[in-house]
Amino acid sequence: MALQAGLTAELSDALCRAVWRRGVAASLNACCQALGLESRVLMPEPPASINPEHHGLSLQLVHPHAGEVEVGDPERWLIRRVQWSADPGSGQWLHALPFGLDAVHETPASAALKLQAEGLGLNAVDMAAGDRRQAFFLEDGLVLELQWRERLTGLTQVSAQRLGSDLLE
Image (cartoon, rainbow, N blue to C red; front, side, top):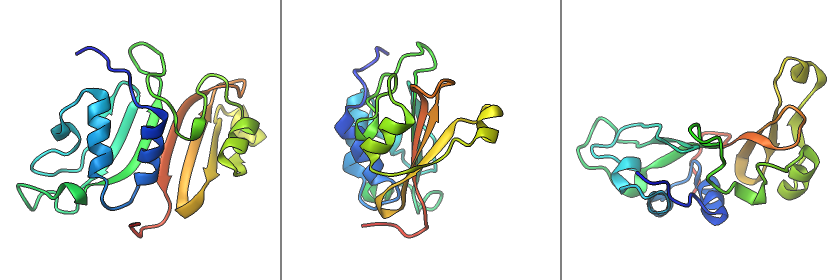
C-alpha cells in the first residue's frame, strides 16, 4: 500500500480533543480517510478493543459493547490514547503533530509556549538515566507527554491521553 500524506495538524488536534470523549466516529472516519484505510480498520465489527498502528500513528480504541454485540454503534467508540512517532520503516515523521508542535525543532521552552502550560519532568536524575519524558497538563484533563531527543531539541514521540475516568461530551 502506498503511503498517504498523513494526518494534517487539524486532524491531529481533533484526535487530541476526541480522547476519552463520546461521539468520535467522525474523527475516526476522517483519520481513516487521511490514511487511506477502510473505516473497519479503526472501527471493526464486531467491536473489540484494538491498538492499530499505521506509519507512526498509534491509537488505543475501546468500545463499551466489545464482545457482547455483532454490530456496535460507531458513536460509542472511545479513543483512550493517541501516539505519534516517526515511521518505524522510514524514520520520517509522516503526520503533523497536534497544537503546532514541531517534531524536528521543538524545545521544552517552545513547547511550553505553544501549549500554554508548564511541563513537568526532565529532572537531572531521570535525564541521566535516559528518561527525557515531559508531561503537559492541558484543559479538561488532557495530558500530552513529549519524549525529547537527547539534546532536548526535537521529539521522538508525542502521546495524548486524558486523566480521570469520566467521559466528556
